[in-house]
Image (cartoon, rainbow, N blue to C red):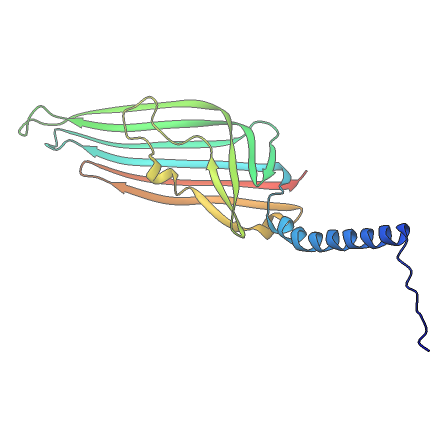
Length: 215
């Protein structure tokens, strides 16, 4: 004779236990899939304070009329340093109140005709600067881009060309993100750029050095 085997249906508590185990397993899988993505997104920022900073920029130019009846040669110099505590974050902005000077000197030669002698004049001016400046940081792939975020050495009192986007777009420096993982970091953004047209030649030099410490 065949023996009858009775199968008992799982009671309510067994069903709840199985359902809970399945839900927990799904949560663990989701965590394993999505946690690394969030960790690698690089959206977190680190707070820093400014230990020291210095900035300088020099604009030299030559402009001339097509008929050479007017010629100008000029130099505009900017220098700045902190005038108080500065702080910020990377990525983000690190800024500080600043003080500095803007010195202008432009020599101009003019004449009324091709046969007339040039008359020379000099425009010179020096003024104090105040405001706020620093650096802007953004993530570019696995690197951090530091960008000049300070006044430019543009003429204010004397006549002359201003620093255009063809130059300011180059005022950046790339660093590995690991540079900002420690307790301190020194950031330098420096360079030289030239622009030329039919009647204007411009050379721009800049350098800013900012020492940071974790805050």
